[in-house]
Image 1 (tube, protein in one colour):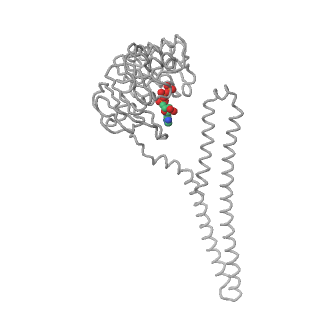
Image 2 (spheres, helix red, strand yellow):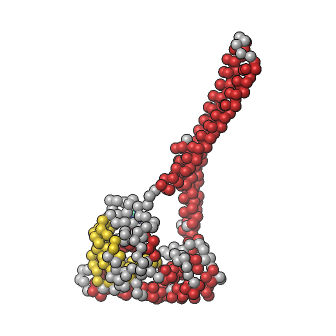
Length: 399
Ligand SMILES: Nc1ncnc2c1ncn2[C@@H]1O[C@H](COP(=O)(O)OP(=O)(O)OP(=O)(O)O)[C@@H](O)[C@H]1O
């Protein structure tokens, strides 16, 4: 019964996952006219849930039918043998009745225990997955470690990094990579799609640990630092900025406990977000952005994410540029905001835009899990048969 409870919960979770994923991406479903197919798929999943719940109900029914039958059979047997004993005058009718009464009380109580047993099994089935998750020890601790009293200087070095994702251990993404980014410099990471640029960002944030080599911040392995301290000094503006349902203010302040209204206004101005927040949104900074920021345009989301990074005031910046093209005006405003954001910080940009690539102090070209070229834009373009030159010529780097 425990096993069937677990499968029932698993199939219910699978059907909920399908529903949640499709409903939250309803625009894509509609754009591809997949409503009927998705409804059919959800129906299939629910059918699976129904099948398992019928199976579980049958097992419960069988179990209770058997215990009920056994109870009644015992009573009839006791009445029969007791009747024989009464007729032989071995026991009195009173003794037989009181025995039956005690036996009935005991039987009902034991019957109650069997219901309790089946309910416990249901609970065990439902909770076993939760316990599995609760008992999992994260390989990277949430907190604990060195917390320097001052912020970092911002020198970053990747030393002989080898990394493959845990679910694909045989497919190394980074393979003996070395890269030094001195404090205050702007480096742009370029390479084919899928070459591992975002992965390098994940490693710097210590979302994963490399299988080999070390990543150092100010000559100390990032594994030594408290992850909370480390994350507080790295600002991230990702390709698809993640906003949470809540107000514009709450989204800008995400990650900062203490802030003043003036700070929020200042960072919004610096990120070129102030004008649209105040003039275009009905409630200004109190405007609700909708689930995952659906009520905002791509460019607006980017600028709110830049305001958030500015408020955090980190020493290191990790920018994952959006590949999707924005209109020229938004593009200009975002580039301006990013320029301001980059000032005085160590910046690693996953670059897709020619303007970013040209403005970077150095370009690091990632190929086959290694940095194969590292220099300024002009220097790399002057290498005959250079990889960067080829990528640039084929317009692989720019959107
Ligand atoms: N969580 C993951 N689990 C397993 N493999 C992953 C995971 N994330 C990415 N990968 C794989 O790692 C490789 C590198 O991905 P990554 O996102 O770092 O590339 P990228 O250079 O940033 O690409 P793009 O420019 O298209 O964003 C890809 O082959 C991808 O399929």
